[in-house]
Image 1 (cartoon, rainbow, N blue to C red):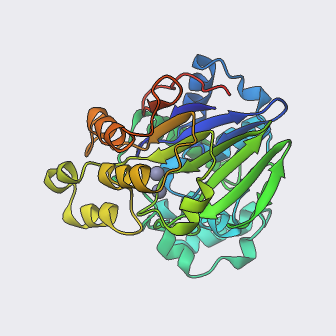
Image 2 (spheres, rainbow, N blue to C red):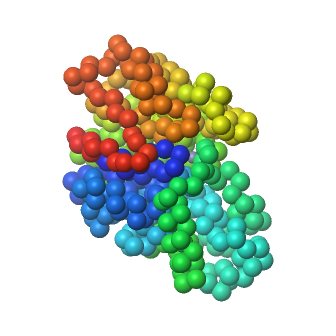
Image 3 (spheres, rainbow, N blue to C red):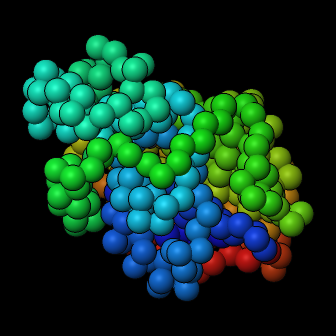
Length: 324
Ligand SMILES: [Zn+2]
Ligand SMILES: [Zn+2]
């Protein structure tokens, strides 16, 4: 497992078994994803599929270009696919009528085109689509250029292959077993994953406002547990975000604070994992030291530091691969 990026400016990781390689989320530009994969000694050409948690920009920024360049299928829930298509549509740069016309001209190649509704106009404004702060970054600019270049030639929503799964169900990608579970977050149909192969179980839960019983259940017996530790409550309260955004982040469909994650680790986590990875740290409202101290305190009695490791995922560079 290699975390390429984690945080409100982009999320992506590679999970590999002996035979299968999956990119989980594609929240950086294709160019940046490939660059980071090479830095982490991962070959983009060997990826078999892309798996998407939800349609927020920091999880799908480079999805279309990456999938098309590699010619690999994308797995998401149908609702997430639709929400992603609404976001991808160039409607935000033209009127809805013009957008419909351009879609008609591009041809109804996409699955689900006929199911678009009035909500498309609303969704295209970006309401709720940007995660946390939705700040631009260099990767986003590059990706935007790539997208604008492609709009003229290619339907921006075109993917080499689309596979639907349902939250609460299990399926396989190659020899990796995937279980998707619902998480409480303000997206169309957000999920976390448990990935299993070669007797190893990896639990992934970022972008959730609290840890409900179904998530606690799924995160048992994991060899690697990746959970978000998004913000420090005081930093968020005193920080630069508008009050409405602060409320959103703190809500039951926002993000886990360091305190909430520590509460989970202290009271609900079973202590099974060889690695606990703290992820999706906010750059504006958190410090790695605060997240780490809170988690270490929570794990103080159960963490055998010789066997179990606490790792912090980073926004701007890959962390070393975790091999089990
Ligand atoms: Zn999100
Ligand atoms: Zn996110």
